[in-house]
Image 1 (cartoon, rainbow, N blue to C red):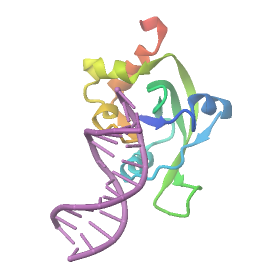
Image 2 (image 1 turned 30 degrees about the vertical axis):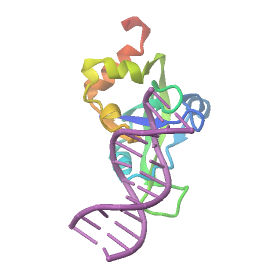
Image 3 (image 1 turned 60 degrees about the vertical axis):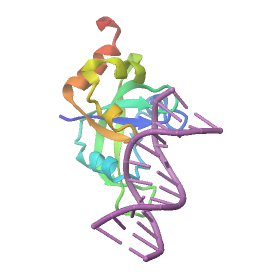
Length: 138
DNA sequence: GCCAACGTTGGC
DNA sequence: GCCAACGTTGGC
């Protein structure tokens, strides 16, 4: 089981939208590194859902429902998508500011590679963000 | 709206 | 293969 983080601008596609739809196709990736990460996703891997530009926080968890297949929004065979479904909305979003000030998250790809839109997350980073976003642990 | 940090493109 | 110019992302 691997862990990931994906970014979405909430005014384009938010966690609310994913919950409303029940399942969503993660399309539009046009960056090789992000593409490679999409291809490495396996069924049932867990994905942190981050709102960029507005919100600036991890707002929920999603799960990989279908592994990488060709991006239907382009004829270019280089690009792929995965399907995601919502699993859990965090009780309270874990903000970028919070992540930046937590020493345990110094090495997180979200900070180290701020422009990457699909990135791997270490299990301990994933667990920590989940607990920070859950009321009973705060 | 600005700018830093990239990634891509194209001339040489 | 290098690098300047340009485009994009995303935080502030």
